[in-house]
Image 1 (cartoon, rainbow, N blue to C red):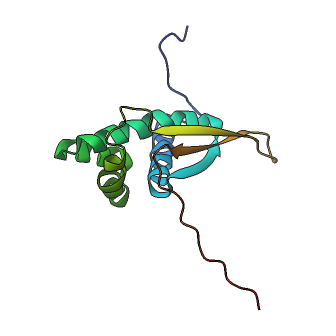
Image 2 (cartoon, rainbow, N blue to C red; image 1 turned 90 degrees about the vertical axis):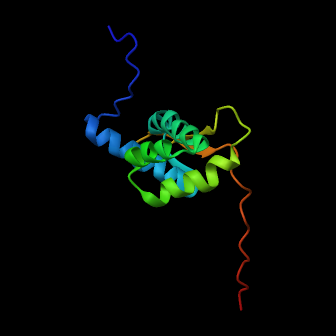
Image 3 (cartoon, rainbow, N blue to C red; image 1 turned 45 degrees about the vertical axis):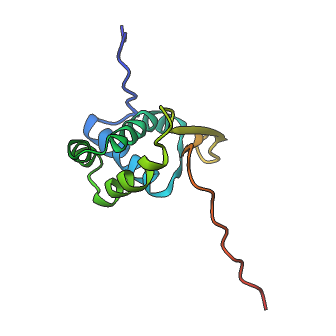
Length: 130
């Protein structure tokens, strides 16, 4: 029986899965929104929310714990400098999953995972055609 066994395995061994999820969290921190399969998005959300909670703590031990999981200095810097202060008043639920539908090639269910308090997108000026 699989009682209390919560790990989503994603068809990978544990080392590969841990690195995959860490890279997904780093991409989410960098871009504020990523498109991935629904199963991966459901596996990434708890880890991303734990990283935000560490960022809100803000002490040296939290920074080192985040770095030991993420393994990217720039992602840790952005997490503690930008994301954590932006979610300061929120008690939890920092990420949202938006379901998109099946991928055309293999019918895998796709989803966006994004931060709830992300800044409004800046519009780029369009180049005028001559």
